[in-house]
Length: 466
Image (cartoon, rainbow, N blue to C red; front, side, top):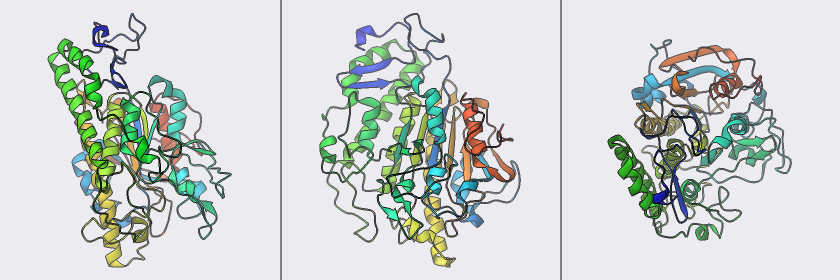
């Protein structure tokens, strides 16, 4: 809305607006406490609860994941070392699995089952059937209308095509998505940072078919990224100045922090549109040269998208998110890590060779560093005396336990955050052996206020989390 129309009382849904841009606000001290304002606008008397799922392919080294000790007194293992500063803020979950993935292909059907627990049928790609709906989409059906975006799906790998006939006749598309609207329909993930950013802050931003979330090599991809050079902050600056002048001292600090965070992401996105001079892959693995708008450095690609996810949560643009660090058999070359030479999937089949086991561990530890960075960012985002992490549930894990053996029992999982007091983190929680992972999802839905009698193959709520 124009600056002169900013209401006397701040509302949770008030937007900073300008021609072609609209920016939702983070939690502010001056947010009205009434449930509904006199003007009919939505107001929240406290920050909402959010839920995110971060997926890593190719499993872990079980000997470097599973610790000794119980409850709060468990040891930090090599894979968990990056998370040690956050030990009081996550639960280490054990003995959860998906029974319906037993005896199937090592990778492809396990990925869509990760958030649904469904039995994935073999397919040529024309008749996809995952046997279930993912938990994020079940939550979205109940909560999606409360926010501008019902969910946000992000990732780094473009979807695959074709059928893996060697691997049992499964469509490779299965391994490209963890979010499924129904058993036959995946929810496209966005892999181009600018397009994800535009969904949050630019009005009417649409990519041409075949670009957004599909293929950064598409001939129209660059055209879709040719925006006005003007920053979204420039477009909403009049509103921002009027709002800042009216806010409390604490609000002014928060508004400045928010605007700087948005501009920082914008600057980094701008750098991805410049010509890239080198490419580490050099055609040795099956990941093509980065397409238009995708950072050359993998870590920057991951962090840009995770920062956009954080902005989506911070502004209550959505309360439900998924992020894929890679697809089922990602060919991502991790040779940028010292001592590593090759792709994640290839190295995961280490055959217990010491050198390859060491490289496999380093790749997993790199992912754990990124999770630690993400949790640290959430912990530093204040929401009325609590952090964004306090007001969230963040699950991280893989659809495999040991990438070399493709086993699916006792999956590697952590659940971070306090869910607004509904979770008691800082502990190792060992469920009975072969407890359905869907019990956790049923519990998370319940904590989000979504009451379901059953989810997937659940047998009840997962105990011991509070």
